[in-house]
Each structure stands twice: as C-alpha cells, then as structure tokens.
Length: 419
Image (cartoon, rainbow, N blue to C red; front, side):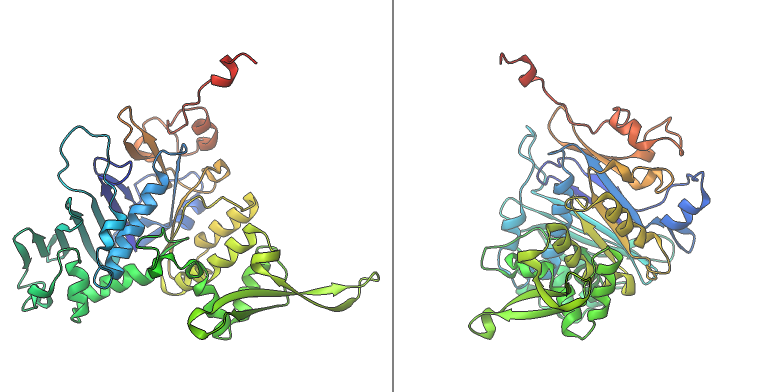
C-alpha cells in the first residue's frame, strides 16, 4: 500500500512536496462515503483514492513522472546503464545552489510493516544518497544509508546488506536493487512490490529509444496476457460493464519473425440483417476501428484486474481523457466497491473533471491541488489543509469559483486586440 510519495528538484518541483494517502480525522456527512473510501490497517486509516487537480502546466503530470522515474530506477538501474540520465531534470528557475539533482522518496505498507525508501541524484546523474528505513520496536530505524563514503547497513536490522561485493555496485545503480539481486529478503520484497504492484497508465517513457521503456505495447501487455492465458471472459465482462458489447476477443501476431511480432487485438461483433436477425460475425480492430476511449479502457483491464486480486496502486494521468463522465465514475466506483476491490487496491489520478468533486462521493482529504507559485515552482496541497471548508461543501463549485486556488490565470489578449 502506498502511504506517501515525496519529491523535490524535479521538473517544476523545487522544494520537497508530499502527497499522502493517510486519512485525516474528518468525518463525512454520509457514513457510506467514509466506509467506501477508507482502508483500516490496525490503528491506522488510509485512503483508497486520491485525485489531483490544477491548471495546465501546474505540475500534475510531473508528480506522476517522478513516481514513474522512481519505479523505473528500482526496476532497471542495474541493467540499464545511465538510466538516471534520461529521467533527471532538476528545477531550473531557482537562484540558489542545488543540494541535489532530484529527490525521490516513497513510503509503503507491505505485510503490515512500513518502509520508507528514497534516493537523491548528483549533477553527474549518479546516486548521491540513498536510504531505507523500516520498523523497529517502537519507531522506524535505518536499515541502510548511502552517501559519498559508501553504504552503511544496520547489523541488527539489515543483515542482508552486509558482506556484499560493494566494489561491483555502480555509482548510477541503486543499492536497493543491488541488494535484491543478491537475494536480499527485505529489498527483494520492496523491489517486487514497486515493480509489480505500482501500475502507471502509459508509464512515462524513460531511457534511450532502443530500451524496453519505449515499447508502447507494454500499455496493453497485462490485458493481452489475459487472452493468452485463456481468460477472455474477464475482458469481455469488463467491456460489458463499460457498455461495450462484444462476443469474442483475440490476438493476432503481426510480423515477419517471432522477435519482431506485434500483438494486434481484434474484437468480434454480431452482424444483423434488416430483420434484426444475426447474419454472421464481424471482426473489429481495436486500433483501427475502435475509439480512443475503448482503447484506453482495454489497456486498463489487465492492470485493474491484477491489483484488485493482489493489491497495489493504479496511477493515471488525465484519467478523464477519452472517457465519458459516467464511465469515469463507474471506473472509480470499482475501487470503492469492496466486493470488487477485495485487496484494497488504491487509485491515484490527475484530472480536470470536477464532476468527481462531490462530498457524496469522496472526502476532502482525497483531493489534492497543484499550483505554481510566483517563483514558478509547484506547490502541492490537500483540500483538507484549507481552513473553513465544510465536509459537505460543494467542492466543485467552490473550486471553480477560486476558493481553493489552483486555477489557471487566463489572460485577455484576444479581448484587448483590435479585430
């Protein structure tokens, strides 16, 4: 489970900003809203869903890019030489000297234990510092720390970090991944969770054009895998829930040899005569004959089916693009439905669709905003941080009226120009 994600000195983010899935103590007017949106783990409460709103170019996508960069570094910094080079983009509008060239930290709850992991980069795209904190008797304690002098592992809490061939650890590779490669139990568990349980819609492409990160078929790979494993009925049922009726779905491999095969998805629909009788079948190409919304929803199915079964978090930038508002609410309601979302999977999305901003649907602490300061840096804050906002207020109306900030500052050039 994702508890928090923090980043700094990355694209439009300058100082450390944190997005949290910790539930606050507020109580919704409708009890069902709290029941549908809160996960209880022991004495702690977490949110199933967080939505981020803000003007264009305010930093919403940069937040997702930062999380995607952390995921790709954990997944592949050992195998992909200089991967950090392709994801490093420090804030450029500060007159102060940079302490680092990117700060990334994630806090996770895995198996009932909290882990806080992060790293910073230097100006040569190498790992400047890296850290992992985990549970102790009372509070958290360090498991390992890394700086310019090397790696220090806690001999009591992190024995898997001891006696490793540190001389083989590259300056641009993460120690977490390095330790996991030597079968470290804790690091392997954290790495596998980040790689396998953090699903990002259209993973922001990181790496050289020849790398696997530029394989666009990856967006649908998990859904295609359901077909390959004989589970077509899962896809057809999901499509039906979205109001998309098909009789069958198949994959055709296109290409001259196995190494260059591309998987093309085809749906089957009934053909009818002028009497309304079934007169045969028609094959419809997902890419060539179906809408962008249908293509997008198809790509979501495998990810959502997986995390609803095993847990994790699904992340979507501009989740409302190509989706009808009713379909979007249906999609988000699946996360709130404990009969569907049995593993308490989470959702993080960015959007401009204010139809979702209703106290009858989500809580105040589930809405975050990005806003550019006068220094052009992104400020990230929650609606629950603002004072004087009632839990049953019309969030959408107040947001559009400017009560919460995070609105575009629109000019009047066209009105002032002589026509």
